[in-house]
Image (cartoon, helix red, strand yellow):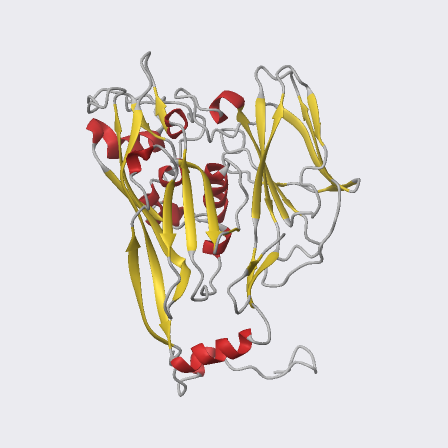
Length: 406
């Protein structure tokens, strides 16, 4: 036998390494989850706010910090639902309950102030997880995929008109039963693994979605209500060894703590009724995103309608869609499963090397333009949801000043 190439070196399978042992973690002395209650009553009508204090020596593990919510659905007068009330939660209900999530680190806002949080959470969950995860742990946030082609159906019969995802979610809330949900927030700092320095307070503000957005209902009488009974944040705290803490203190005298992020900006653009084509100029002002996902939602579904699914991404007879970066067309990456049946997502990789690894890419200031043509005039106003992913670094100095601008 011979080598394929003379410069090929010998290799050994890792399965043959039977003498080494795994390294031992000594940098963390202990870790625990601490429950934090809202700073104000849930009946106040304002945003649900949590303060996670950074006092003490413990660091905060935001990647393992979870939002917990107990909620139920009632009639408009607050009475319990009847068995035959055709009403239930929309998909990904834990996140769909909130239109906007603002996060402050030591009073510095580190999230975009937009009311598209449910769409960010839905797009990331739909496109980032496999079927096994969606059918197991993601059900804890009430993710039950709507049946393709029946996205708006609230029929309760077991026939070809049924939306199985809606029925599964409704089973949790029928007769106004209380449902418990838990999951990670779809916020940039909570989607990275580095521990947050001690001495940094985290303030989370959750702005409620309209009930007509968070619920789907049939029949003439709507106006069902969502009652959030309880909410809390379970923050993971880690106590480091003295040696590691001293090393961090010395390093902060020379530089800043750095947190590489993939910030997401989710924008909405409106295409008017009867249009046959539309051009979106300067989709994101300034920096060019690294990835882009587009989908179309009916305007009335986006703006709160009990009778429509707010995540029904329609095809709308699109016969041409192109993205241009400084006039150069970018190929589209289509998600073909159930494409055209309520899951019409257009994905674009705008990186030069098509790499989704740990490296950064050069920052580009470019004009991003989207051109859409329809085979027939639009019968109603459509909202285009544009999900853009960027690259940035958040820094914290020794005085716990937060530096972040992407």
